[in-house]
Length: 52
Image (cartoon, rainbow, N blue to C red):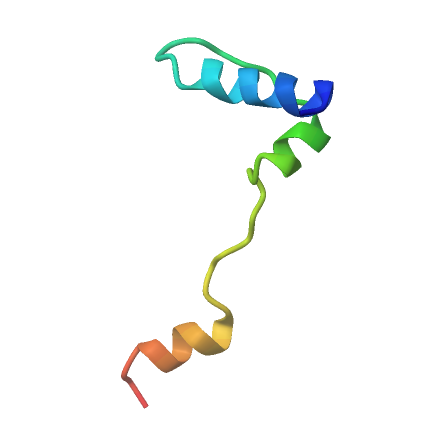
């Protein structure tokens, strides 16, 4: 495991401690999946409403 991955894993473990604040740089946050977009698209939301 690379030093970068090891450091990220340690930060993620620390982040699980209630009240403990961990700082992530933008690249770490992206790698950890913090900015994964999984919202419905406009079309999917419209299709799921049942008001056609």
